[in-house]
Length: 215
Length: 215
DNA sequence: TTCACAATCAAACAAACGTATGAATGAAGC
DNA sequence: GCTTCATTCATACGTTTGTTTGATTGTGAA
Image (cartoon, rainbow over all chains, first blue to last red; front, side, top):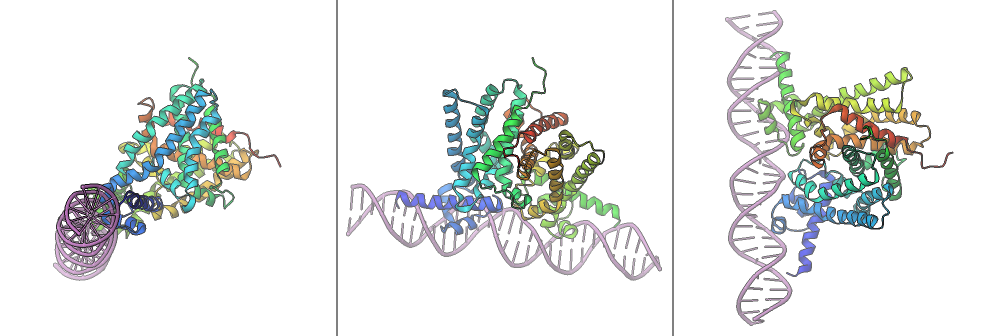
């Protein structure tokens, strides 16, 4: 069978798995649900991905990789143009994720929910994904923040980057709950609104005075 | 059999379930693992809790309830003494969770990880737990914040409360990863340190100027 | 037309799952 | 001493799980 059809099958599996992982979680999703949704044979998963574990890894890295490439490209562009303001760094960090979550909005905010679970899923595959796919990005943004916020100690930079990531993860995972809590006042799918609110909060949080005595 | 032994069995199940849910997640934890760890008979779960679903609910609400009672008591104390500063409100919100996660540190930060997954677990029981156990707390803190930050619109208060919660959830869920990222520089089990860093960031984020034109 | 081989398929595998059953146990009340 | 009843126990039930197998299909190269 030709290459195009293989891609079709693999992609159909990835799409269905992504959707179901987002809705019900990894463990609660069976290969039979996935292959039934994707309209492919059950054995196709093990044929193309070897195991459920590797399917999980593929589902996540298919989205994480281009997202992080965009982050790094944007950060690099800022640095070569010497235009790294705190706001622009935050935009470079936040926007690729929000774009990704909203651009594939044929299934709504679904992928965001899956993405937001990246740090909390106890599934073994996640631990290695965080290290291999997110490690470099985190370190590079930590450096960029440290340069822009020279009044902070290294420890404070790490803490505040951690909170900055947490805001994004929680918004991806629980954005719908915010809509409910605010009784519909907030639309978590409005990209510009989400970005504006996040950057405002994070910029202020990151810029807060240092708690440590100057050296 | 007497009351004390029943409590023993129920608590042994709850303790084991809590530990395993934190380590591997709800779906990946079987009743056989739980009862084997708790050293009780397999049928004891369905005898005492009717189903795995109700066990899940019991495991979570056993920790959430006293935590939220403490939050509301502290907020009420601030309001009757007219002593609600932004910092004291944040302390009233954050400290009960951190206390809970660290006081039961016979298994380290484990319960925190389970708690941090409250908003991301796709398990059906979570949705109702968030509404019933967290709804009132969120609304009361939203009101308190709105009073202390009169320059913000209602929408902005909800957004910023959402971020403030996200910081906590992510710290509970991924605190260990922060230790790893910072190469051991940060100790996420140091209560005073965690609290100080969180309140500093959140206070600044919440106090940021409004983005909306004054009415 | 024949061959080779990647891809798909139905079917089966052992293992593990949540739940239910009915008998055994043992302390409390009469 | 006998009965009562909540609890514990070993065992079994019917499903569902991820994975494997061997046959079947269909396309592109020789």
